[in-house]
Image (cartoon, rainbow, N blue to C red; front, top):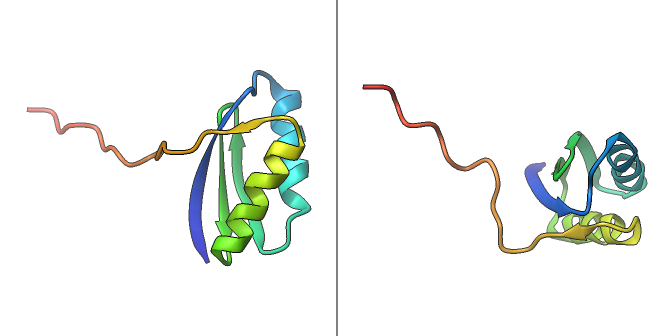
Length: 79
């Protein structure tokens, strides 16, 4: 299972987090790991499951931000 972080716009409160979590919990092949304002980290069994997760987020009324990769930069070591 691959871990993916999906960038999401339109989230602004705890209700949004709950709505996205609920939408993702209903997707086969997706395991919700963490949902925060602006992103969701999920385990996916396939690219099809990732696409279904993104559709569920859109159907819940939020926008999936394409072309942005999250959690890839490490802080620079202190000198």
